[in-house]
Image 1 (cartoon, one colour):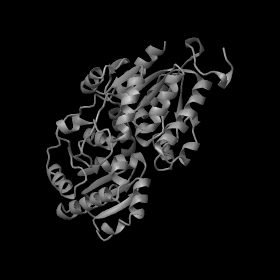
Image 2: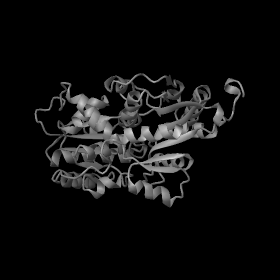
Image 3: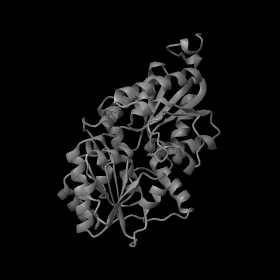
Image 4: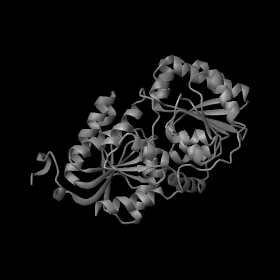
Length: 380
């Protein structure tokens, strides 16, 4: 057997009886929080890598504190200095590879569609370590989105695919995926239920000082929305129309990149005189979840927020032309609006009056238990 990092490929007999969980973004930390808790409950032999893709305190560190999760055993520090997708993915791949060579787990679990997951999956695959993809099989069929590329590539190199439902399983079968497919539900349901219980035990203001108890939330962060001035301008105009015509308060939580682009494109004047719109920095997950649970509507381009809104029965307007979470559209809890201000207004008017009695399409809240049980069986 080779020594340390001189190994380029690991054999079965080189691997140790342990699991690795890889996180690096807000949605990933949230998704894996119930899985990490279940692994701890089972006293499993596992470790966590944080790739550093989201590195600001509000988008990262506060999550571990709020969710009462132990700090990851490994955290990659160099990624925050990377500007481009390729550079970022390469740096995370390199960092994960070094940890895998040191720890030699039998299975690496990744979840979702961020660069973090692609990097870790590639690093594990090239070392002949089994890859398990949580939230496999979801498709938006929008090839402009880096998330769509990532999810497809991860699915095709994964050994074990944990699908959220039958529709995701069908997508995988249509693409002749070679890995083993397990329909487990989505751990985001477990996370929403568990973490909402935590935040409700805390005394947290729900409306950021608005006199009215009724408010809408908005989040914008996708590159195709914030990196193009015309798209971002239209989105802000759409929020302004909703606030005015629907006579509602809107809290816009600005991802660091969104806030940067608003200033760079000199767009703050579009809404700075609108008293019913407040721009706030991204808040901790528990505070956001608490705010979301009390909102009358959420306008977002986030896949995770779409899911959370659906689970909590909060009507959602998705600021994209498509979504990988088509179940939310089918049950009537979500609608697509793109970036057109007029479409955003019409969608908001429609969703403010929908019946909130839809069912949860993402599982029974026991996905983490199922995933950990399957992973432990596969590892043995």
